[in-house]
Length: 166
Image (cartoon, rainbow, N blue to C red; front, side, top):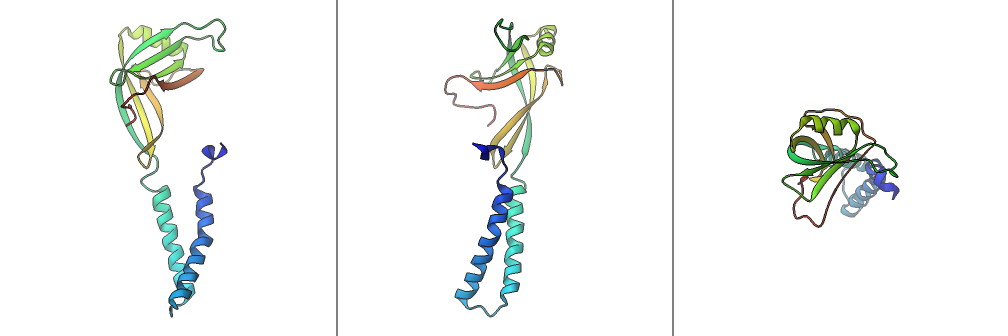
């Protein structure tokens, strides 16, 4: 669906202006207000813009928090018929064993092998809107802050009760 990729907030704002103006004029007509309609319209429109800005672009949007997780890892060699000819590195959350993050990356595989430990620290930035997770970004894995990757993914197995994003 195309709407998932389009920010509809500007459209809602523009479509809301005539609705607010119509409701203002109807309200003034029903109440038979002696106050000038232009003054009421300007006040109403100003309140609409302020409230719209607060709720749709305010402190509820783009909340980010950074969390550190301990993860176990597994390196799978590249498949002969696979599109990518690089190893696949899969990280499993220690606290949430049903959840995992994977990368197709030679750099990351080499770094993890060189590190030599079975568990690594992973630093993840989680972005949420209105308390619901929009996405996450892995900032650091076992001290590495950047690595080449051909493909990355995340997922879970089964029906987990808890999530690392909560």
